[in-house]
Image (cartoon, rainbow, N blue to C red; front, side, top):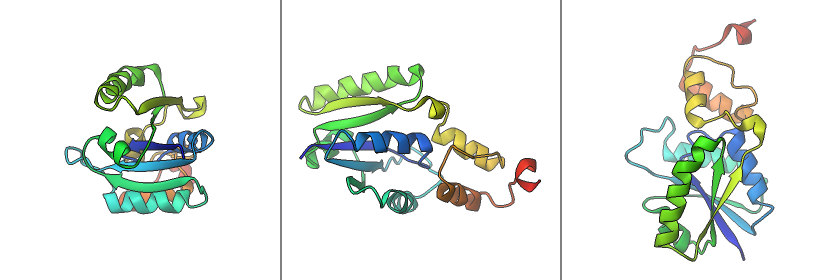
Length: 167
Protein backbone atom coordinates (compact mmCIF):
# COMPACT_ATOMS: atom_id res chain seq x y z
CA UNK A 1 0.00 0.00 0.00
CA UNK A 2 1.39 3.38 -1.03
CA UNK A 3 0.79 5.88 1.78
CA UNK A 4 1.40 9.62 1.62
CA UNK A 5 1.05 12.21 4.31
CA UNK A 6 -0.07 15.76 3.68
CA UNK A 7 1.14 17.74 6.70
CA UNK A 8 0.07 21.22 7.64
CA UNK A 9 -1.66 23.38 10.20
CA UNK A 10 -4.94 23.55 8.21
CA UNK A 11 -5.99 26.59 10.25
CA UNK A 12 -8.40 26.55 8.46
CA UNK A 13 -8.51 24.20 5.49
CA UNK A 14 -9.02 26.08 2.21
CA UNK A 15 -10.25 25.11 -1.24
CA UNK A 16 -6.59 25.03 -2.30
CA UNK A 17 -5.90 22.36 0.34
CA UNK A 18 -8.94 20.40 -0.85
CA UNK A 19 -7.68 20.56 -4.42
CA UNK A 20 -4.32 19.09 -3.39
CA UNK A 21 -5.98 16.39 -1.25
CA UNK A 22 -8.32 15.19 -4.00
CA UNK A 23 -5.49 15.02 -6.53
CA UNK A 24 -3.20 13.22 -4.06
CA UNK A 25 -5.92 10.58 -3.69
CA UNK A 26 -5.47 9.71 -7.38
CA UNK A 27 -1.77 9.02 -6.79
CA UNK A 28 -1.77 7.06 -3.53
CA UNK A 29 -3.69 4.25 -1.89
CA UNK A 30 -3.98 6.21 1.36
CA UNK A 31 -3.52 9.92 2.10
CA UNK A 32 -3.10 10.92 5.73
CA UNK A 33 -3.95 14.55 6.44
CA UNK A 34 -1.49 15.19 9.28
CA UNK A 35 -2.39 18.23 11.34
CA UNK A 36 0.76 19.59 12.93
CA UNK A 37 0.67 20.60 16.57
CA UNK A 38 3.15 23.46 16.61
CA UNK A 39 3.46 25.15 20.03
CA UNK A 40 5.21 28.13 18.41
CA UNK A 41 2.10 29.05 16.40
CA UNK A 42 -1.06 30.65 17.74
CA UNK A 43 -3.81 28.96 15.75
CA UNK A 44 -7.33 30.36 15.45
CA UNK A 45 -8.83 26.88 15.77
CA UNK A 46 -7.75 24.36 18.39
CA UNK A 47 -6.27 21.07 17.26
CA UNK A 48 -9.54 19.35 18.21
CA UNK A 49 -11.58 21.83 16.15
CA UNK A 50 -9.32 21.41 13.12
CA UNK A 51 -9.47 17.62 13.32
CA UNK A 52 -13.27 17.70 13.62
CA UNK A 53 -13.64 20.10 10.68
CA UNK A 54 -11.34 18.01 8.50
CA UNK A 55 -13.06 14.74 9.38
CA UNK A 56 -16.50 16.19 8.61
CA UNK A 57 -15.33 17.72 5.36
CA UNK A 58 -13.36 14.69 4.11
CA UNK A 59 -15.68 11.90 5.30
CA UNK A 60 -16.67 10.96 1.75
CA UNK A 61 -13.08 10.39 0.59
CA UNK A 62 -12.41 6.74 1.50
CA UNK A 63 -8.66 6.99 0.89
CA UNK A 64 -8.26 9.84 3.39
CA UNK A 65 -7.43 9.60 7.08
CA UNK A 66 -7.13 12.60 9.40
CA UNK A 67 -4.61 12.54 12.24
CA UNK A 68 -2.46 14.92 14.27
CA UNK A 69 1.17 14.78 15.25
CA UNK A 70 3.93 16.62 17.10
CA UNK A 71 7.59 16.72 16.21
CA UNK A 72 9.40 16.14 12.96
CA UNK A 73 7.26 15.43 9.92
CA UNK A 74 9.66 12.79 8.60
CA UNK A 75 9.53 10.91 11.90
CA UNK A 76 5.74 10.90 11.75
CA UNK A 77 5.85 9.79 8.09
CA UNK A 78 8.24 6.99 8.95
CA UNK A 79 6.05 5.88 11.88
CA UNK A 80 2.99 5.76 9.60
CA UNK A 81 4.81 3.84 6.85
CA UNK A 82 4.51 6.67 4.32
CA UNK A 83 6.58 6.65 1.17
CA UNK A 84 5.87 10.31 0.38
CA UNK A 85 5.19 13.70 1.88
CA UNK A 86 2.81 15.87 -0.13
CA UNK A 87 3.45 19.60 -0.21
CA UNK A 88 1.15 22.04 -1.94
CA UNK A 89 2.58 24.96 -3.85
CA UNK A 90 0.57 28.06 -4.70
CA UNK A 91 3.10 30.46 -6.17
CA UNK A 92 6.78 30.35 -7.01
CA UNK A 93 7.71 32.12 -3.77
CA UNK A 94 6.45 29.05 -1.85
CA UNK A 95 9.02 26.90 -3.61
CA UNK A 96 12.20 28.20 -1.96
CA UNK A 97 11.18 27.38 1.62
CA UNK A 98 9.54 24.11 0.55
CA UNK A 99 12.65 23.08 -1.39
CA UNK A 100 14.91 23.62 1.63
CA UNK A 101 12.48 21.65 3.81
CA UNK A 102 12.33 18.82 1.26
CA UNK A 103 16.13 18.59 1.13
CA UNK A 104 16.32 18.55 4.92
CA UNK A 105 13.69 15.80 5.08
CA UNK A 106 15.56 13.81 2.42
CA UNK A 107 18.73 14.02 4.52
CA UNK A 108 16.85 12.77 7.59
CA UNK A 109 14.77 10.13 5.81
CA UNK A 110 16.18 9.24 2.36
CA UNK A 111 13.49 6.59 1.83
CA UNK A 112 10.69 9.19 1.91
CA UNK A 113 10.07 11.31 -1.17
CA UNK A 114 8.59 14.80 -1.18
CA UNK A 115 6.00 15.38 -3.87
CA UNK A 116 5.06 18.94 -4.79
CA UNK A 117 1.56 19.48 -6.15
CA UNK A 118 0.70 22.83 -7.64
CA UNK A 119 -2.76 23.98 -6.71
CA UNK A 120 -5.12 24.92 -9.51
CA UNK A 121 -4.62 28.51 -10.67
CA UNK A 122 -7.97 29.65 -9.24
CA UNK A 123 -6.70 28.83 -5.73
CA UNK A 124 -3.16 30.16 -6.09
CA UNK A 125 -3.84 33.34 -4.10
CA UNK A 126 -5.57 31.62 -1.18
CA UNK A 127 -3.76 31.07 2.09
CA UNK A 128 -5.11 30.20 5.52
CA UNK A 129 -3.63 33.46 6.84
CA UNK A 130 -5.42 35.55 4.21
CA UNK A 131 -8.67 33.69 4.85
CA UNK A 132 -8.46 34.40 8.60
CA UNK A 133 -7.74 38.07 7.98
CA UNK A 134 -10.65 38.38 5.56
CA UNK A 135 -12.94 36.65 8.06
CA UNK A 136 -11.78 38.96 10.84
CA UNK A 137 -12.72 42.03 8.78
CA UNK A 138 -15.93 40.49 7.47
CA UNK A 139 -14.64 40.03 3.92
CA UNK A 140 -16.13 37.74 1.32
CA UNK A 141 -14.84 34.16 1.54
CA UNK A 142 -16.78 32.79 -1.44
CA UNK A 143 -14.76 30.19 -3.38
CA UNK A 144 -11.90 30.34 -0.83
CA UNK A 145 -13.20 27.86 1.72
CA UNK A 146 -16.08 25.37 1.78
CA UNK A 147 -19.35 26.79 3.19
CA UNK A 148 -18.98 24.67 6.36
CA UNK A 149 -15.60 26.24 7.05
CA UNK A 150 -16.90 29.72 6.31
CA UNK A 151 -19.58 29.14 8.96
CA UNK A 152 -16.89 28.11 11.46
CA UNK A 153 -14.87 31.24 10.65
CA UNK A 154 -17.92 33.50 10.96
CA UNK A 155 -18.61 31.96 14.38
CA UNK A 156 -15.11 32.98 15.49
CA UNK A 157 -15.74 36.58 14.40
CA UNK A 158 -19.42 37.29 15.14
CA UNK A 159 -20.91 40.55 13.93
CA UNK A 160 -18.47 40.95 11.04
CA UNK A 161 -20.49 41.23 7.82
CA UNK A 162 -19.60 42.94 4.60
CA UNK A 163 -21.92 45.37 2.84
CA UNK A 164 -22.18 42.83 0.01
CA UNK A 165 -23.44 40.14 2.39
CA UNK A 166 -25.88 42.51 4.09
CA UNK A 167 -27.30 43.82 0.81
